[in-house]
Length: 118
Ligand code: SF4
Ligand SMILES: [Zn+2]
Image (cartoon, rainbow, N blue to C red; front, side, top):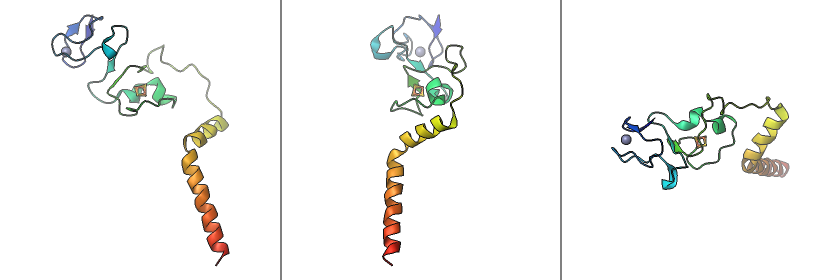
């Protein structure tokens, strides 16, 4: 027996919505797609995809409900990966901030040209 995250009433694990408060319990009205919800705080804080920096959901990092949430404290959610080397983290950072780096590069070139013409 599951519990409704809103009214905390025991509900059937297959229920699509809470029969008492009508809170949706499954995503897209499909009993096979669980909708994880948080009544306090954000789910992302304890999600595997936040900790491995791979989430690109629009609600990230302030999701209070999510279909892909995976609790990092559960055995299934624990990342079983070795620590990434520094160069991998640097490459990942560069990929995420490539636009910012491009603008910074253009600014540096512009400043260099302006200083040269003084
Ligand atoms: S998968 Fe969902 S809960 Fe996890 S980090 Fe992304 S938005 Fe947050
Ligand atoms: Zn309820």
